[in-house]
Image 1 (cartoon, rainbow, N blue to C red):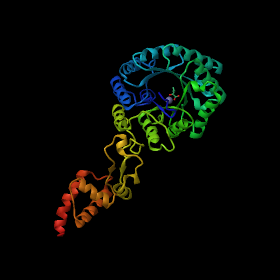
Image 2: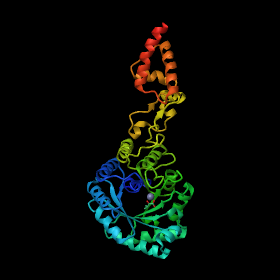
Image 3: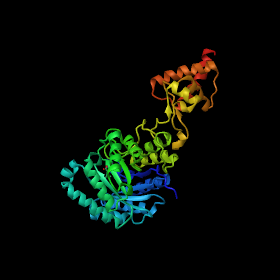
Length: 394
Ligand code: KIV
Ligand code: ZN
């Protein structure tokens, strides 16, 4: 079987990093519902939770592991033996299991959070990655706060993790501090300097504190990472994680710049995004890329006219490609006659030129007074229009 060197592994952490953000917690059934959808959509790795965190988390990871059809099921754990044991137990029913263990490597985190000397951190990495390998061959190690870790120390830590048996090395931008250039440089530096780097897959995990999570993830891929960790709708700690749908659609839409492959069925994106909003009560902002209510909606007259002539004038991807039926031409005060006529035709009204002008003028008055004009209001407007024209003798 030939190995696709441009294949990007999509690692979804909606049920772990996403779920641990305020207001996004999910119950057992909700997690299972989301996991089934992620599996069906073609996510390669589902990080199902943090089994040591609570009994509920353990049980959810265990249940998801028992149901997953294709995805690798990962559980997160600190570099602590009892965490690793709990994770190993939780993911046991899965056909394909991954233990994902992490420890901070930045000077700030080691000094203040861990209160550990760098040498002790290196020892922990070796001890815990080796321990995790007793349970599965698929072990991921993350350098928490990796983007603020000194180069020399990061190289040592990564080399140690790979020697101990880690098969995936994740360099998180835990606090969303990186820029695309410096995040990419970090991956290039590791590829150049770590002698055993070819024994592991490099992974990006980006937070969105500066709104750069997707750009940073894609920059890492361009620099050699072949796994991206992301979440549906970009939920996650603070400003969230890189949004799965944005990464996948960027790759799909710009193969000229991003010649990578993945396994995601993009036509499920809208369904999965809406399911998550339904489960968490977290709706996306209307202008959210790919899945926001306005992502395929057009109100301005110039744009609507362009869309009616050729959708590519104002859309770089089709609504069908993300599982929507069609684009929406929203009638509001910026709309023009072309879209207005088309909308009336779609509603079953074919007006002559005079009647159309009259209706359009009255529609503009209504649209000036309110943000949107609904189909019902348009129908009422056409009915009033007939009466109005009769009075005017048109
Ligand atoms: O942001 C982060 O550093 C993480 C790790 C635990 C992977 O979520
Ligand atoms: Zn994270």
